[in-house]
Length: 395
Image 1 (cartoon, rainbow, N blue to C red):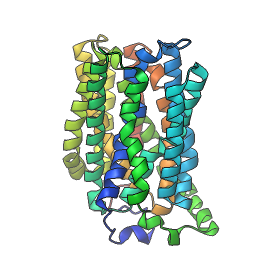
Image 2 (image 1 turned 135 degrees about the vertical axis):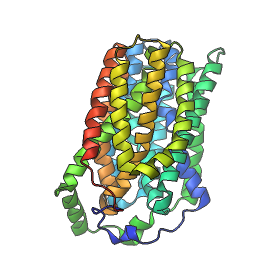
Image 3 (image 1 turned 90 degrees about the horizontal axis):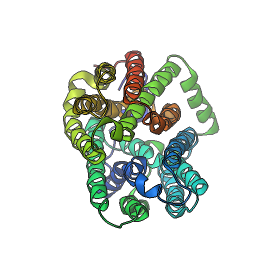
């Protein structure tokens, strides 16, 4: 842990989480692709409905990320006050209500509103799952856990890409396809209350009093902690925006969307498997600084390549490699930098701006490929500079 870790709770040996509970929490994170990228494959089916268009689909994607921003500003701070577990399931159940409305929507307005609801209620499940697990297992297992989760996320997206390609040649509706990909998360929400317990650091007998809540809020407002929050906000924004923009831009960056999404998923799996060693050697901060710097240079070079060319796709895959490793480290640094009483709040603050930036991903994907690459180069370069200001871990 680093110097800023002030709570004694995190220094005590953490008990092991139950196998079934860990599996279900992993499921909530792994299956987030069912609502963050599924419209990449179902858009053609959605636009065939009366009154729908590609613009409506892009607005729906944007509203989902705006909803996620609102959610991280409201629900995640509540996790520091009332605990992780109950908020996870409350938002999960409300999120699936929004999913059902989205799949049954017959008008664009209802569809867009439902996408906003998915962002508000379903998005926090993956983030809350990470905080809960990170506070339950040994800190030595953090890098292996987040790498395993990201590998699982990529495998699931690979299944979605392959399955969607197969559905392309059938009469299966986009609604039925989407239902299929949401099913594992639905099962997790049904079984979760039986196996998932509250975080030992935010258990019922350790919930904060009003005085402690005030003191915790003051921690985030004090220097240098508030500076770390601002730097973390920029890093999360750059990584999230680049990660999802490379997915939403698949049709512009390569000759075939299904092939590109499958290649990205396979590439992600390989990179996440090797990310553990990179982080162990360089530390989370060092790995994030190096990867974001490399991504900025690669995306700048990519902006000069011809769109939908194999050379552009190759450089984008290299950039994706850098973003993947950074996607691991931003989760690790949240746990290292911020003490438990304000950890979920800091995660929420980082994601507020990050999700607003990500909301522009679908629209950025509609711009010329060179402009898309240039913007991503700028934001990752700025995030590299912000990472440099974060504190180093104790040796």
